[in-house]
Length: 98
Image (cartoon, rainbow, N blue to C red; front, side):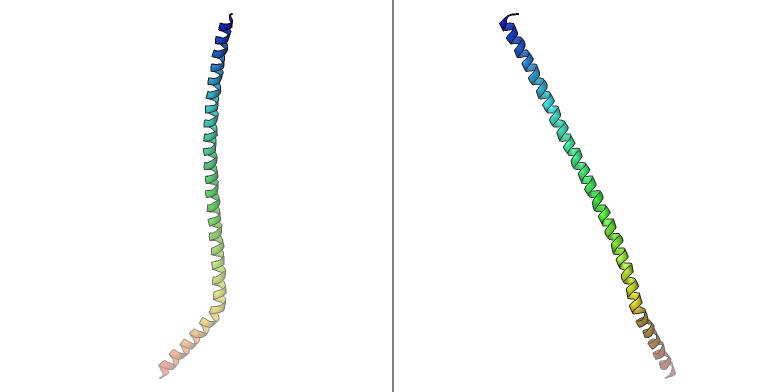
């Protein structure tokens, strides 16, 4: 083999290696891009799931507070309403006597 043949062979091998590295770099970049998209979607799905969970918890808490307030209001207003009913009944009785 002559020096020229060796240089030609070296050049061909270098070009082949450059092509392979370039193809590998493109494939790696594509994989990284695809993985980033998948990761972003997973994060978005997780965030949506957490938001739904928080909304459900808020609903449960508000419902419990509403029930508790209703019970407290019943305890406070039932005696008042009972007395008002008695007064109304007395006034009806007096009105029918007149």
